[in-house]
Amino acid sequence: MVTAAHPAPHAHPVARPTTGVRAAVRHLGPNWYAAVMGTAIIANAGATLPVRFTGLRTACTVFWALSFVLLLVLLGARALHWRHHRDRAKEQLLDPTAAPFYGCLSMALLAVGAGTVLVGQDWIGARAAIAIDVVLFVAGTVIGLVAAVAIPYLMVVRHRISADEASPVWLLPVVAPMVSAAVGPLLVPHLPGGQAQQTLLLACYAMFGLSLLATLVMLPVVFARLVTAGPLPLALTPTLFLVLGPLGQSTTAANKFADVAGGVLPESYAHGFTAFAVLYGVPVMGFALMWLALALAMVVRARRQGMGFAMTFWAFTFPVGTCVTGAEGLGAHTGLAVFDGLAVVLYVGLVAVWVVAAAHTVRGLLTGRLLSAPR
Image (cartoon, rainbow, N blue to C red; front, side, top):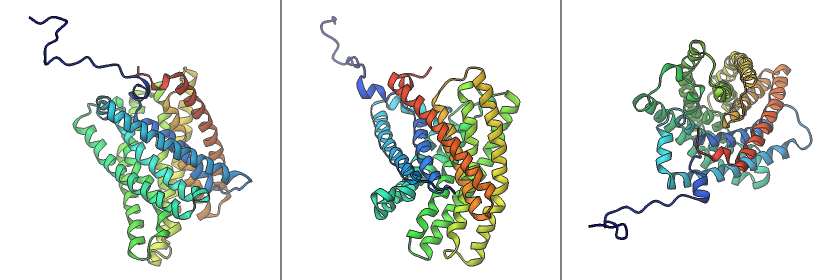
């Protein structure tokens, strides 16, 4: 007979409740990398802004440093999450509302890496900046390509999704290769001439096509859901801004190709990239502005109906930042002041929404609300 004082030899010990840092990271999801992306884009977009004033470059470098620190902290926290809460991590991977955010890890690595070359070298030197960017670019690109295949695969074979659950969040894994395409050209001048430079540039162009075509498959589904099922839930309304990501980033990528193609590819191809930057970028930027107006109207409506802060507010930052860099590129290749003005206006809005998102995030961390179990 077994008594309470003498448990059975094969009985499992009662698990002790998790406390401290381990408990804090249990509900930490991959969506938190959006804060890194939103901070890094402040630096990246500001580095090539068509206007210059005292302190701008220093401020951009500070934002890059902040994004670098945030990236390191989140990588450590997510490592703890996978080590101590693997059950929760697997739940997130199999959750159709959380899994697409795994694309944010790739974009966070790529955005911080690009900032390291653009402004970080002011503090750490060009050699160290290039070395760091190479590591972050390779890691971010590999993760992004894996996510671009693995997440849609899971959506097909494991996730059970109805038509009215379509969300702009679905774009996150497939837009990650577009970020690689946009920041990869920064490394082209630092490679040996000939095959190495041509291979990287055309690989970026291939990722441009991969991401663009995947976006063209996803976006009609998202828009059809809005038309047939009505507005998104209040907390998800800011994710409408995610549509701006592939639009602004592809315009940025097309302009970056034109910047480096001369001297790397044959002259006829280099001229083709320059023409493509404008012929592609201008109409896409026009559509981006239309979508921006639509998304703003939906956000105003949601705010009037009581939309409060959620981590989805970070969707206001990085996608808008890609439109800033896209407008900057169009301004440089067309010489039109209207694109320079658009870049400045969007950048001011970007900084404003970053302040709002960052302030609420810090407050939510201090109160513990953002790290509590989802409701």
